[in-house]
Length: 401
Ligand code: AAL
Image (cartoon, rainbow, N blue to C red; front, side, top):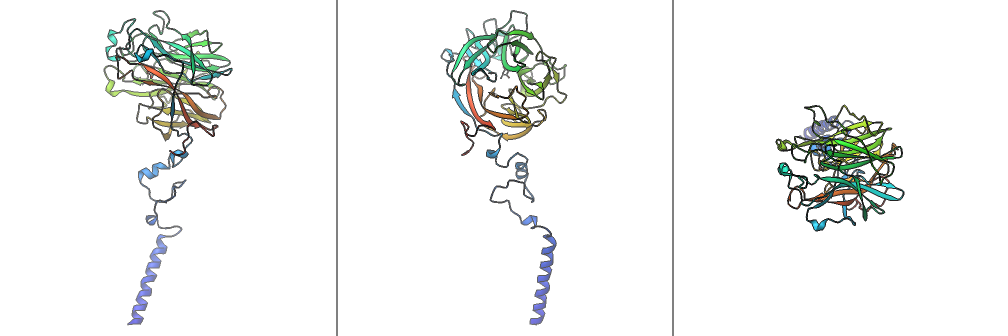
């Protein structure tokens, strides 16, 4: 009996050994592998849940290690008066600051009206003195600073031209380009109170030999609306140029389905328009829209490509994205409490270095204009962030997050 039992055991254990060796050929059995305690830097060769799988599609599995991740610190600016917040003065949609001869220059939308805006839904009651929205009846002003926090408001850069020239109703949301030693401001030019048929306006451009002007009008509708039925048929907003691969790459936003009839289907797209002359013609990229999230445009050179911050609107709101070619953006990281209308200082925005170094601070705005129409106005603020490849000790660190 014992001989019989012993041989049965041997047979049994032989069988087990055989089964084991069949399933482990080359590696440990996948079904027995567990997700490691130490964060893996590469995707482990094992079955993964959808979320664990997705984690390795990002540049780093831990967001804190990702160079396109940051938290944001905000600082109140000094030097701007807001009439005690009564809503009659507003400053918003700052340009990216530029540094010229040791001084930063900043351009922005300024409204200084007798009364605060009455709201886009009452745009038909707007008059020459009563603004509909916060960016109605505005001019483009500029300010200078030595440290990016204390500013001196210098005066009007581009005022509203007389009727019926483009922008007679309002000029707003400027951004700057430096190209071959000259300065170019791109901005939205309204010919009606915004809100009347939507937020309809094309982009105009003016140029100057010095960042403090004088500015010479250089053209209207430089980024033409798309044809009827196209996503950018009614608006080209938030123009933001960088110099990339020898050309002017101007990113812009179109809000479609915006106001008043189909506001519930409101969506945004960003387009790319390319030119070799700042006054145009600009050619729209065939893959437009190149972004489908982001209420404003925030683009800067990063390594060989372009990085962007998408905020507020769209399925990918509050993400940093990266495109190696400046066209095909992918999510790099997810951020929170990100700056609205962010306009970072990028020393290499116009130098076309081919090796973008990122950004560590900029300007943005805070607004109560949309939910308090009787006192609605906006203020500009400074943000600091950790999106620079050169700053080892950023003013706001990601460690300890
Ligand atoms: C902003 C920008 C554009 C819009 C309005 C003023 O945040 O997107 O400039 O037209 O709102």
